[in-house]
Length: 352
Image (cartoon, rainbow, N blue to C red; front, side):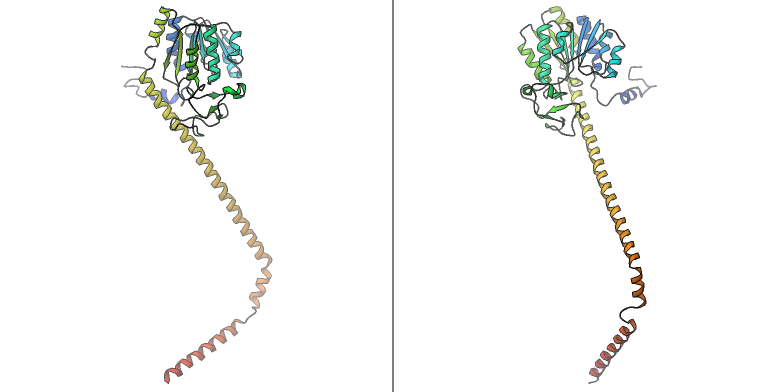
């Protein structure tokens, strides 16, 4: 039987696909199957995408039947512009969310995958639940590492009261503190030093927004895969709600997906730690090599100085060899005579 994993005549299909995949799976495109189910249940026409990866994920919403996608990105790259510009139904909106949302047509589906901190996500959800209460909201990164810990792409752009102590070190699953050997931003983002507590992390923002929702009832489905995908949908339309529940039921809270995700992030953060240790070892080796080079240079300098001194004093050495200050012959004669006297004295003593 031939499957997508190959067959007895093609045993390496799965391995070949695995080695072509990136080491870190993080893209929303991986949820295309789930998004297709959501769209089949709701038939959305207008999509608002907050946070554009590279433009590659934006087109999948059109593939699943949407008419237009408004792609919100504060600082689009040229690659992103080119990717979005190839399709007239993909509309690039330059601006910061949530402030820019009021300037865009209301969406049937909002895909929120921008700045992963409490203040930003809470602001986005408050606006959507108030102004587009019938929309479905798809959110990424509800679980580790940003579910209960803020990430900041631009902490300076937030109110100081909304920013936790943060730095360049990142989280790891191997202990509860941040570390230079963890999931770090390499200059692109910083992470809150502490996890948990109030107003910290994406999932905390979602919980608080739903608790404060005064417009209508909403439910949250959480898919525990690839850092966690959340789907918020209204329950005011019984038929639509039933279709969405059925569409998400195979994934929502799946113990199998959760176990696989835990294993995935454990393996990935171990790889990060190993990479850090290798880099640190390379630095140590470089420092040692530098020290050896310094010592070698110092040894060469000492040898050169010794050779110079020998050349400078060569004539003095030659003069000493030719005319030593004490005659070696005289030294030898005196020693022989002294030894003879001692021998005779011992002999005379023995005779007596």
